[in-house]
Amino acid sequence: MTMNILRFSDLVAQGQVSGQRVFIRADLNVPQDDQGRITEDTRIRASVPCIELALQAGAAVMVTSHLGRPTEGEFKTADSLAPVALRLGKLLGRPVPLVSNWVDGVSVAPGELVMLENCRLNPGEKKNNEQLARKMAALCDIFVHDAFGTAHRAEASTYGIAQYAPIACAGPLLAAEIDAVTRALAEPKQPLVAIVAGSKVSTKLTILQALAAKVDQLIVGGGIANTFMLAAGLKIGKSLAEASLISDAKAVIDAMAARGAAVPIPSDVVTAKAFAADAPATVKFAGDVADDDLILDIGPQTAALLARQLMAAGTIVWNGPVGVFEFEAFAHGTETIARAIAASNAFSIAGGGDTLAAIAKYGIEKQVSYISTGGGAFLEVLEGKTLPAFEILQKRATA
Image 1: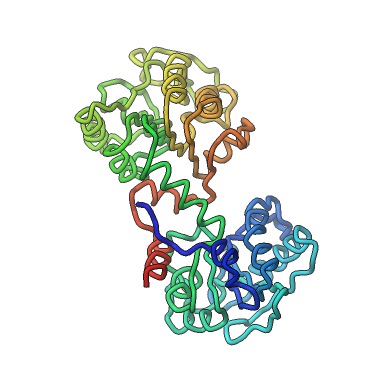
Image 2 (image 1 turned 90 degrees about the horizontal axis):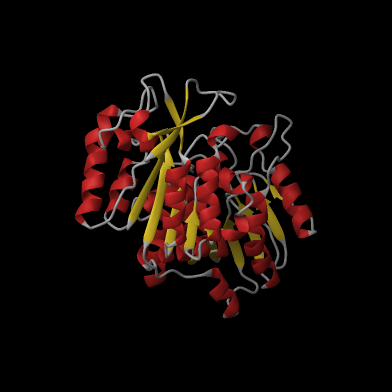
């Protein structure tokens, strides 16, 4: 999994960027309210180091991103990157002009920066149209991929342009993701503990199967844990589970056991009679779950045991909260796990929207070694897939 890719920072250090046309594919897909105001700008802030690196090196800089899910070829004001250009300008302390209809040519001088309108408006973007990709590649001397959130998609602005640009490299954000993932999965310090939680086994079955071959402890949570409890012969009442996947859960448990590794099954749980924030919470031993109970969190005994395992880990991979942490009565399991990860000396990498929400809720951003910005891309890496962005950058680096 160790990756040989060209890094933009190396090109800058070698003095190869001054006067060059640099095309940066960033991930500026930020949430907006009904008035089009940006409600959360983490992704824009995260893109600043790459842009500043290019500007300081004396490049003529173009940056683009997708925003939302526009219809190709049909411009609507709601799809415009105008609010993003405005916010980026404030962060950089300089105006950021927005250029529309840019595929056939862009005028930008060294030391200048322009934003190219929503790349998903270009017909052929999603299908990685070769003609479009070649036109984009012709705009630049150096293509910089700095959008990990799109690394699992082979589109014209992420893959095609990397094929045809004179030079294709990874920006600082993408390079950091590659380094973190490599450290966590290819060269992990043992023991390696993975937490895979969520509502459904079906959406994460391939990840569970891939991790079962390499981790020392596989902690399952949420609806996934309920299915594993069924596989272990426990009753789960009317809890969310997938009975059709019990045999798959058993196979994961068996695969781990064959390697002397384990999938810890909860010994106690927090139940309620209804899925509601104000539903009374009851802690029960796992064997005492009633037919009308909903399991909404792991119990304190289980949480304490898992916390000890996490404190002893060398590497931790975290995807998903272990309970309904949005409801205070059912948040203790996720909080216990979050605080254990924060206090652990392990190298920890976390990803996925709900996971990031839990990290923000408990204020442990600084204690997690690496927080992945890409949801789908992060999951595909955990599955052991080679992402299209990584594949094409490796090809270009060795060509």
